[in-house]
Image 1 (tube, rainbow, N blue to C red):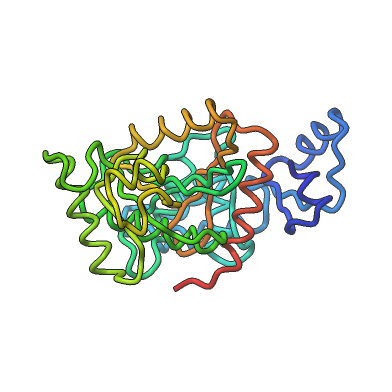
Image 2: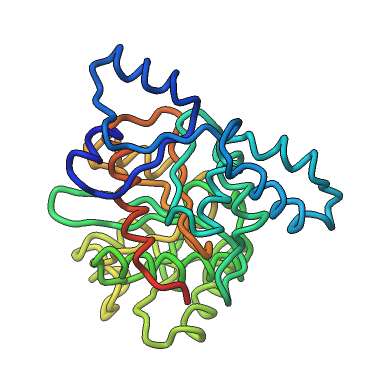
Length: 297
């Protein structure tokens, strides 16, 4: 992936790890890393300064300098501090780590953007004729009403960043007023919050997936809606639904799923699945490079 990104001139790359091991492994596999920077967190001259900064930021949690020096040997922490201090513009990790391990450092000291309360994620679903945005499929297990609204607003902003006109469907097992229950009511309230905060945004909910994507079904279930039948951003009520839906669509339709793309952080940090392919890594790094060019609000 690094060789491909460098050859295509997508961005300036820094790989984290023991340099001799990385270069030996690359050579053994016929991979050319010429022109790519390699930094070993354990031996880098940056580690001392990073540890001092981390100890300062986390002193209220009892982190002293010796502990910070130990923590900064970890690639996720080291890489995230590179982002925080402007040494690099973004970080991609997770091919060999859990999502929690990738995100934790960013939550500790990169923090969320002004006006954003939670970090969430989307997948960009590359269909044959369009791009759809699915959120949140990776981070928040059971968002409450306010969090669901935050996810919808952040996902709409992400859609705009990648050239997708946001028409937001707040998904539920009920469309409009056809059903009731606590879960449906939460989606309805979240939709009202989104409308109150962004009156200019096209949003509909609660709405079922079929009514959100199929014009003929939309005409029957929700006639006159500006979103039904032509939604581009889909907000799932919980992680179980979102995670399984994106995988089901990916596996059954052949759609390319790019992500998870993290949103809400002050600076771009993105996660990879431990089952990621070379293409997944290339796509996620390209996405991160785009995010790095968007001014922080």
